[in-house]
Length: 188
Image (cartoon, rainbow, N blue to C red):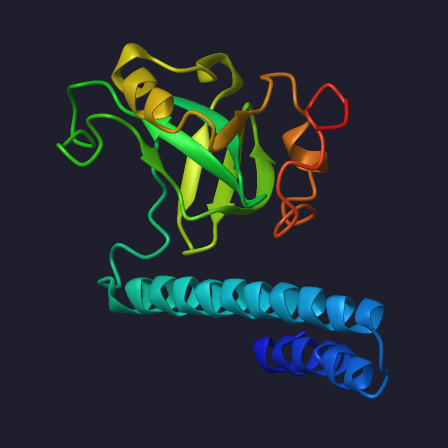
């Protein structure tokens, strides 16, 4: 499905508001008002997603050729679900080596996980922006260097357990449907 198709489907759903104008009564007026607000919020979200998508696309296109496809090897990692439903990697490096700089000092969230593959003992997480992160199960967890960054996201993220089957996850299942369930299966 293309973004244009999605936009057209949103606009067609908005016809409910026009249809409700044909019916008279307090109940239909209230419904029309509620759906108008819902569709305005939906379209606002759609525009934000489009802007993020195009910004990430430009960022990838502007990278030098030698940086494209270069995997990152963080020291530690966790997977979080943002309140928007998007799954992201939160990674950190030790304060030494070639990969460490002030940008990585407190951890970094990737652009969003689109797929995961297994390579020997490692998992390769592929991001929306085209980035790749090579991580090892035994390094799952937050080091003190990333704990402060994670704590600053309180109320905005859910931490997935280390024993999650990364290869079986549907990474886009809950996008746009925030906080559907906790990871122990209880309703939120």
